[in-house]
Length: 217
Image (cartoon, rainbow, N blue to C red; front, side, top):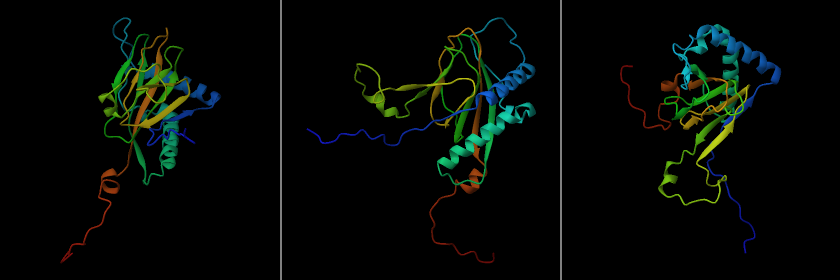
């Protein structure tokens, strides 16, 4: 009946998935794990199913300077791919997530930042995904039953992660961490990035009005 029928993915939400070279990531991951073991206190109680999170200033820890370098290099690449006009950007927060077996993290987003990312230093089968939710909230107004999920109806998308993976995404995009179904800890380091001098270089209106008279100036 139709000569052609094409589904166009209008306004897609992009994730940038980076994978470090195997040898480089192995050395970096070992350094991260050793540093976290040294600077983070052990749990005060016995076995727990809750994720432990460090303070949000790991980007200032000298031993993690190489990881921060990776974050900045990848973030700059994403901003350049987006053709963003900016002078510089800041890592506004950086923290470790240590998830024992059974732990998970509920759906959330990272307010007041432009990009966020998560680097995986340790994963195992059963603890190697991160979930992202479709940001179009209006889709919940009407949802028929589907025979099976596919790219046209899925509401939550799982993205694979392995040691050496760095995933960067818009900070507003809601995401969660599925339960750790392995027998080992899952260790990742997250960060947020925001434009430097945002208030003076990006926030001002982008249109020009009639210049006012500045007498005596």
